[in-house]
Length: 72
Image (tube, rainbow, N blue to C red; front, side, top):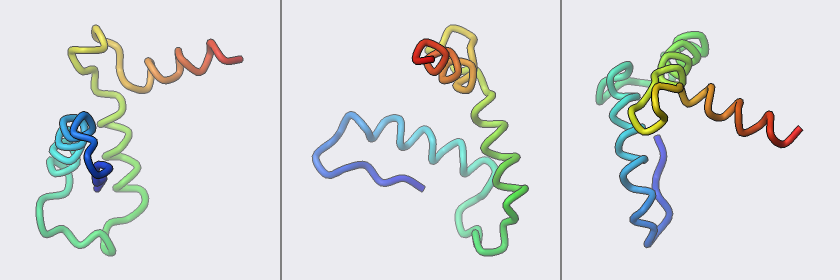
């Protein structure tokens, strides 16, 4: 889980969205000590490859990779 910086209300919306997506895979009360790295990797992979509306059909992974390619 991620906690927004103090007095940074702009971080709250994306923070709540990310927490909501994670809670679809790991409901409230889940003991993360029992979650395998593979299960966590699978959940994060599915979240990162989910195309949100604000990226015009591109996944977060595709968008991030595109930004990185401009740096090289």
